[in-house]
Image (cartoon, rainbow, N blue to C red; front, top):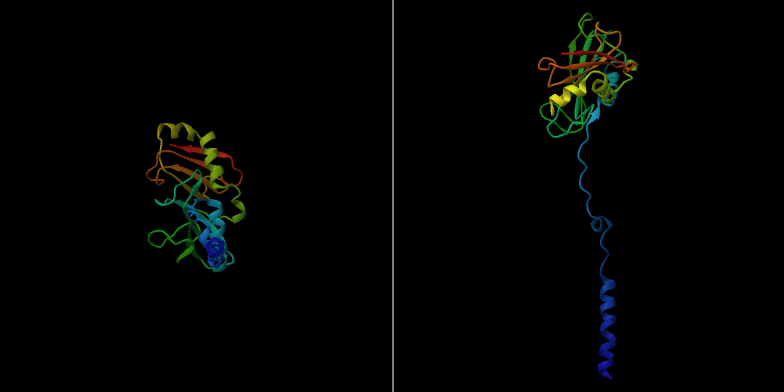
Length: 209
């Protein structure tokens, strides 16, 4: 009789012991998802973020220049970059101010999100002319595709694989609207191939060699 009581009691004790264990928090039960790698953004997207901050600096702020910044820790995608720099001007104040937008904390004064640089003096009459945000209707990724297909960028890329691409947006006397310059190389000075695309209409404008 005693033996059968022991046999009955054993599974009962095991059941009670199991119930007494506190359940693990859901956060511990779920496996931690790997942190998503930072993704590059288009020039228009970054410009719009910087424009919001620039308007707080000066309500009449307009764009003067936008340029991509390559980052070693963020892989570039067609028409996209990990960081961008824009220069805005206030004609009423005669001042200019540069801003950066980055998807990560970078070297030097490059910080995640929008970061304002120092003010500088500005006078009209330079090569680059101010343009309103409404004039920027074509994004850098669209400009890249047009440069490939209509500006002979495909041919140049095949002959020069792996070359970095830089994006520069300016309005100059060369064209009536602001234009994207898709540059094969680190800068205008070191490149021997670039393509202009109208940033308002998306039309192919000119190939520079």
